[in-house]
Length: 332
Image 1 (cartoon, rainbow, N blue to C red):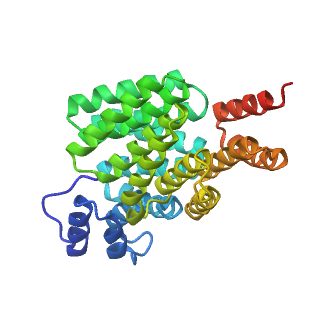
Image 2 (cartoon, one colour):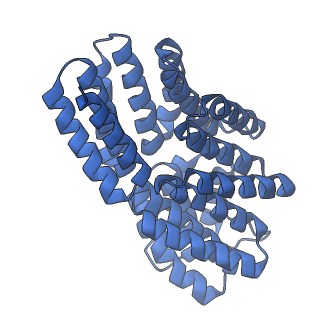
Image 3 (cartoon, helix red, strand yellow):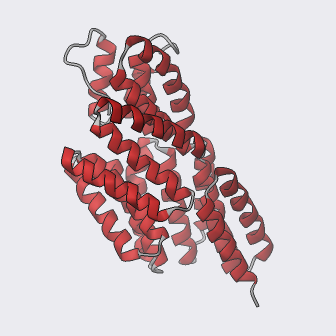
């Protein structure tokens, strides 16, 4: 979050910040949507955060990048660090992992220089996500452990929730399903402490992913459906795409005829938000389902599409896991 000064001469910005504090990010976008790029950096910083929190990474990246020169000129080091960190998040959501890493490393350097422990912790946690997608799961977990310790010292409960969820993803990738599920439970506990239903839903989808790996499609379907009820109205296309993909996978395993439509909806949602990673994950799921149904040609097409996208994103571990899966299907 962006620091809130005690006195703010901009009434519109004051109103928008109040709505942001209430979690009404769609309203923030509506209030600040007419800001002219390069004219009001504080408004742009908050609008960029609103775009990011509603899943519009394309708009977030554009608005946040426009805000930085004005923040530098104003000497607003606090918001500059925050905006740089959020720029990394927007780039990451769009699959530009190198740009994301560069922004987060810059944010961490600025934060360490200025004694901003919170932004340093956030950037460290974010760099863990980059390490994860480049295949360095242990490096990712190391970043998350450092960030969790910092959040605990600072009493930043929302940061704890987000970081436990990200750690769960790496633990799930490493095959430690019990630890992954425990991490998602911790994320939910912390998210409920701050009454953040978006984070609760995000971690619930994570638990549904764990359930699928345990072949409990009934539980996964119920959990993903619950999460979508919360996420749908929020307009966060990235999280909605994740939930729809997990739901579609669960439905397919249960033989539900609505599975294909749900997965196509997940793909459309990912494309609408420009979320390439979610797009690749949907294609991977469709490849697995097609193979289970005995449709080898369809599975190959989905596999090729998923692999090309993962490769473009630099998601090394995903490429390796996908190749291993495909080769095991072809083995006699």
